Image (cartoon, rainbow, N blue to C red):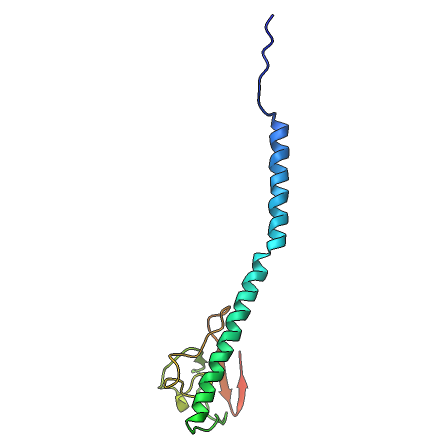
Length: 128
């Protein structure tokens, strides 16, 4: 009489291995936390952009220009979008309130939203 033993893994053994691997992947993702890494990267870009804004404003003021008064009105249909270099808007301004064309190609954008909208209404600045 011949004994025929089949070599290999049973279905239960394979399921246990797959379950263990799934648990390890979940634990690894919790440790790495890619969403937190993305947040940190966006915050780093924001800090860099703030430095660029500071440079733009400093150069603007060093050229003898006065700080924006905040009294220029933008028509109701024309809120400005950050990053624009459109000089046809009232007061030649973007959301920063100064003409940045001489100091930079555009005003930096928020990395999460890709646009910042700002309206000036009677001297009060609102960011919808």
